[in-house]
Length: 310
Length: 310
Image (cartoon, rainbow over all chains, first blue to last red; front, side):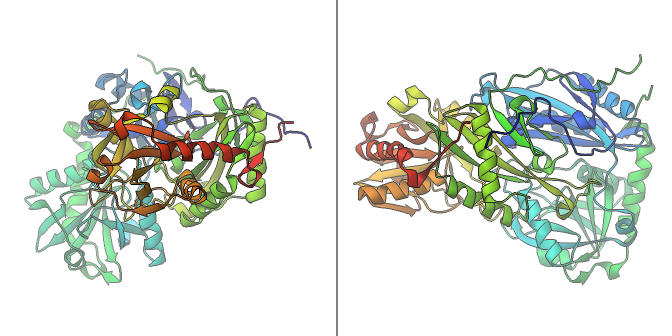
């Protein structure tokens, strides 16, 4: 039996969402936006990233996302040949060329490789890339209307002693395990715990607990989400106390309201936790206030940056 | 200022090692071996893999690598359309088409995506890929001759309560942090600790400690390496006691010999740990026996499978 033929140019049979990516100083359609299987960003998940959204033609709080992205680069000993203004221009171009008025915009830096494929990360040439695709949300329309159903998993979120959670990273196998745990319990998404057995975070979102008019969110071992920070800012403006603290499973189950925060969807309601209805199964008044102000703020020039589409 | 042009076909400026990859039923050169930035294998490091090596034209212990790979797929709720024989044929073809007599062969399954880019991993179509590139080693020739210099990092290896270490995975940010810690101490590579502060493993390798003629290796929270298993098997054949147990930093520092194991290089000596010389800075007698038998076994048909190059 003879050996198979080598195909010199790979024929890609997959479909991709409409969007534009930037890599190696080229703006390309999403079907061209790929990383080598040898890039340590893939092989070692040695990468950091950020996600900012565009809503009705404007970036929301882009400055905060850029702050976090550049801080992550430094912590990972990575360097890229673009400054903040240049990255802003690249992201703006990805969105404008995609034509999306509502977009999910991701910027990524991978470790890359060295020319001789050394195993030493100091030898690698880091790679920056970015893309804009249609806006996505943790909760769909139905879930936004009725509230999500969450289940707490016994899986422990990767601890800060292993991976610094302030570096936004792609280490999600614990979160994926939590999702399968939640599906088995009939829930829609999951919450992981920290090393003390208290609540940590879910796949791509932070969690907020409301009790007797006070809002709390886990204080450690979680991503310092920009939308999490925005909830603090919105609560301050609304005169609502919002504090970071340890939250036990029992405290969360006894909450008057629960909501989650993510750039992918904003502030989203939870009305069922494990087998318990939260707040009588209705969207709560504090969630409703925070949610409304969150979207109002998208029109505030102090918190948004308009995309130039032509 | 007008918007930049969109490049319909990305022009790749990077260089790749000589080799052949398999994806979507095509055998392609390494410059075509890429994953979409949207594949959850990249975006969530939601993937498992295995690495087997080919030495002088034969796979070494391929069966054990396939056992582990298929076990990982099941634990991650992944499925691929190839059985063991078909994967063996794919790997054999990648190596044969590459022409490499000594090769590093990786097989990968990523979560992939669903056609509508759902966030639910159950909707995703998992993707299998594989590649063969030149043989690589944790230790270079000089390090093999004189022994590696390791430093123990305070970074804790991602614990089993977060990610099951028996699933070979790409979550390496803790190991990368450990490497930078080691470089700061003037060492060449690193050892991470477990949650008890005892020794866990290093980037891509297991560790072995020799004291008074007995070989020990960490018993939990580590990858169950095929080369680690091979060291157990070789010690049994050599009449040397080899046990898995907890190993404290102090115990390791007091070792008579230290060596590491990896498919990328086999059994490799360590002669310096932190600021201490190990075994008087010389390669030890047990390391030397195990190392010699390890390479002898590459000629044993029971442990090897010849590549058909034409």
